[in-house]
Image (cartoon, rainbow, N blue to C red):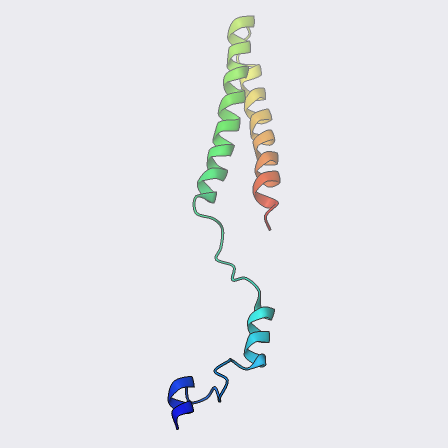
Length: 95
């Protein structure tokens, strides 16, 4: 009875877990805990910053060249497309 009290009731004399339990743990792989914290804010920030930056570049070109609002919407569209590509490249590569 000393072996049962030291090693536990179901483990036997060696105190080691059965090989079936170990194999099951190894096959299960890492637990997916979801996306890293702050990933959604990183995506939103990238989209806003891309459109904002290139929109301001287009606004500056419009202002310096004396045009009406021509390059501002072009800059917004270019910035959103470029930042969307960057989001897909950066954050989609982990999956």
